[in-house]
Structures are given as C-alpha cells and as structure tokens.
Amino acid sequence: MFYVPYFMGFFLYLCRKKIMNPFTLSYDPIYFCDREKEIQQLKSNAINGLNTLIHSPRRLGKSALIHHLFHQLEHSKDFETLYVDLFATQNLNDFVKYFGEALLKRYHSKNLLTGVKKLFRGLHASISFSIDGSPQLSLGFGEGQAKTSLSQLFDYLEQRKKPVLVAFDEFQEVADYPEKAEAVLRTFIQQLRNVNFIFSGSSNHILQNMFYSAKQPFYQSSESILLEKIEIGKYKSFINNCFETHKKSISGDAIDYLLEFTETHTYYTQVICNQAFYKSGKKLGLPEVQKIANNYIEIRKLDYFSIYNLLPENQKRVIKAIAKEGIARKPSSINFMMKHQLPSSSSTLQALHALIDKEIIFQTLDGYKVYDVFFRRFLERYF
Image (cartoon, rainbow, N blue to C red; front, side):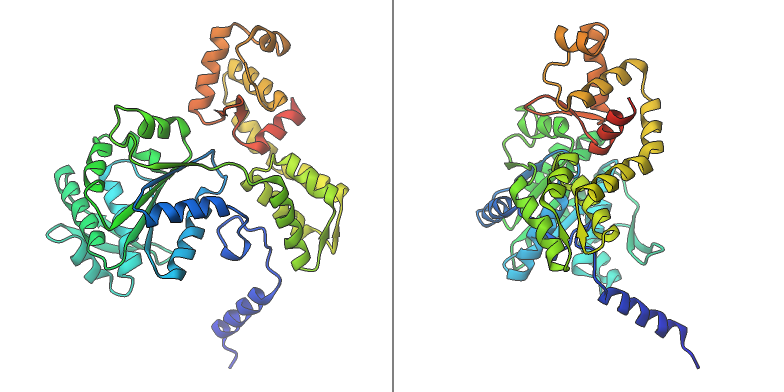
C-alpha cells in the first residue's frame, strides 16, 4: 500500500537536497558574512568576564551575530550559551517566563516536568505546548514571587560547571516594565561570577539612557559594540562568492547597484539578493537587478502607502524631505526648510521627535535617516 507520510518525508528530503538560496533571511552559519572583528571582541569579553552591549539600527544583523558567536562557542565547548528574546515581554513576570522557557529548552528538553520542578521550586508553574510543539511556561505568582523565581534561575546558571554566556535580545523592552526591573536585574547580575551577559537591542535612544546615563542601574556595567554596516568590499565578495558557489554569476555593476539601492544595510541587501538569486538564470546583469529591486518596491507599495497615510501632514512633509536627502544633517535649518517647503523650525522639530518615537526615522552621527530603506525608496519614487 502507498504510504503517504513516508512519501512526504522522502519528498521533503529531496527538496532539501536541491540548491538552497544562500541569501537567507534567518541565521545560517554556512552563509554568514564577515563580522570577524565583532566576534573576536565578544569572545574576548566573555573570556575576561565582561558583559557586552550590542546596539545598532534594526535589521543590521545583531541577532544573527549572537547566534554565530554561540555557534562557535558551543562548537569549542568552552562555554554554555543561552539566547532569550525579550521583544514580546511587558513586565517582570513575562521576563521570568521567557527566561525560564529558554532554560527549559536548553537544559531540560527531554524532561520538561523535571526541569520545571528544578527551576521553579516551591512556585506554581506548569507546561503547555503551542501548535508547533514548542513548550510554553505558565506561571502564577506576584511581583515578590517573580523576584524569587528570577533568583532561582540565575542561581541555576551560576551552578553550571562551565561558564555561561546569556544573551538578552531586545533588552530595551525592560525599560518599559512597570516594575523597577532594571534595578532588580542589575542587583542579581552583579553578584554572578560564572555567568556573563550580552545585552542587545535596536532602540538606541532607550539603550543609551539605560547604559550611558549615570542615574541608571546599568550605567558602566558593560563594554559596548556599535554594530555598523558590513564593509562594501567584503559584502561584494560575499555576494559574488555565493553566486559562484552555486554555478551562477552576477556582474560587478549589478552588485554595485544592489548595494547602493539597499544602502549596504544587511536585511534589505539579503532581501534583494534572495530575490535576485532565485529569479535569475545562470547570469545576472544590471538590468535584471534593477527590475527585481523596482518590482519589490512595487509589491510593497500598498503597505507603505498605509504607513504614510497614517502620518499627520507635518510628519509627511518631514519624512519626504529626509527621504529625498538620504541623510538630513540639519533638518531644522532655514536652508533645509526653505528647500523642502517646511513650516516653522519648532513644527519641524516636533515632527522629527514624533517620527523618532515611531521609529520611522533615526538619528546617526551624520544626521537623520529613514529607518526602512525600502520605505525611503518608495517615498523617492511616488513623491
């Protein structure tokens, strides 16, 4: 009799054997580009017992960098590693829940109930499973018990035989907890000797206040890495090598256009490269890449029109002006406002602050930029 599950399993196996797209939008150790300097600094900090803050604009590859570091450390067997994504957390209870789930998956995946008993002694905790089979931790306690549970989780890591490196990704969320969570966490963390931390996030203005303000608990608690764009030369070599490895070719001017279009920003570069790789034949030139890039903006235009139309009129004017400039160095200057027909300086500054709070624009050392590179290209095209 024809056995369907077996056939489907065999079919999926065959699919995996086909040529895979090297320009992944998630982490893959085989297709990881550069970041050698940052990896070495992170390793050095871990070996020397130093905590590290990694910050940068969104989608520059912070999470992939952490996963690549952990991949290397786990392979060397010198460290145990733990990754905790805090993006969906809203309070200290959520923090404990996500922290606990990460610990369960890392150390007790074969016997979750035993793990719950070890990690949450004397507390009401239970395990359920999501649709995809991932364990989900249910906790029932108040703020005082959350602190007790947090202490138990940190103590568990402190007792491990090997040193442990923990990454708290999207750590800026902690600043918005209703509890004074920064002080609570700092108190626990500074007592640990066998555990070090990587704090990562993309909201620079929040992280700067958390780690650089003398009034804040995490002031001067960590070494800092500002993750910047991958060097153009290294990215060009990476793109070219990925095509050549799969017996394809892409012209130099096509790569130059692609990197200019995406501003060498990791996520947006990977998106266009991903599209270019699977839509191309054996050879890819400048006209094909231009068409692929422009078509992608066309596909996304309804999404971007929705974002744009939700903005007040003054913010629309400012975002269009910044998009046209690429980098707006002095957006409240008379010259800039006259050039782009903006209203008063105070009104422009008010719009700037609102757009920063919405994370539609961000401020660099050079000036103000649109956060989403594709949104900027959309604004250039349609306005």
